[in-house]
Image (tube, rainbow, N blue to C red):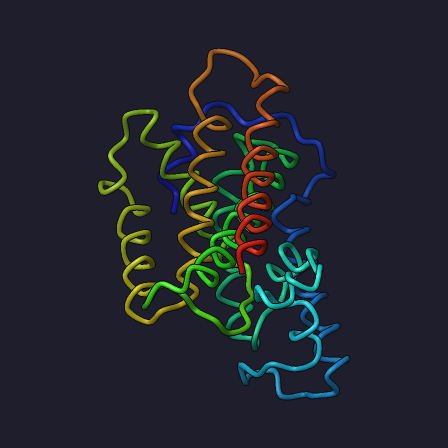
Amino acid sequence: MTCARSSSGPPRTRRLPAGWSAAKVLVGVHVVVFLVGLVSRGSVDVWQGTVGRFEYDYGLNVAFLVRGEWYRLLTSGFVHFGILHLAMNMFALWQLGRELEAPLGPTRFTLLYVSSILGGAGLVVALQVVDIPFLSQPGLQGGASGGIFGLLGALAIGLRQRGIPIMQTTLGPVLVINLLLTLSLQLSIGGHLGGLLAGAAAGSVLLRPRNGPAPARDLWAPIGVGFAAVVLAVVATALA
């Protein structure tokens, strides 16, 4: 997707060493976490989407939150069930990072990504509690897809704010296809939709057109979205 680079305003001054980016660092963190999971599992079968002790300890399910294990709202976004699951998400993260990190800078990009992961986790928990047929998925969940959908949502809203029809870019078909796959294959519906909504909400502030540098107060947009997602999870867990 190269549709947003020319329309997102001038890139910010680098805050990381040449050749580095927040997206690359995040990809590295995901890979390291995956390798740690393999070592702890004692398995060399990286292809199977199996649930081992590591995934069980850090994946997301409302039953664990009831026991007070709130860290899972974030750690679940770094747990992947097999190398294909990891590879697809990391490719998307790297591609979207190339589009978004230039106009946002590494700090805002990272906050956007984390708030999207929390947004996906919050909706996963809420849907598990309300138990809506088709939408509620009671099993253990994990993966970076909530964060990926959040980046897609932010990019879409940023284009819309600049008057660019997203269906006339590569982003539109990519977003539609991913949503159709999410619903038809039931691929973490809460995680994907929650991440998409969180990213769009934070992105509407972070990527809005400006004549000058973005004010520091814009940082509160992803922070507020992430906080709201945590509150949603807390309220839902209290009702479980």
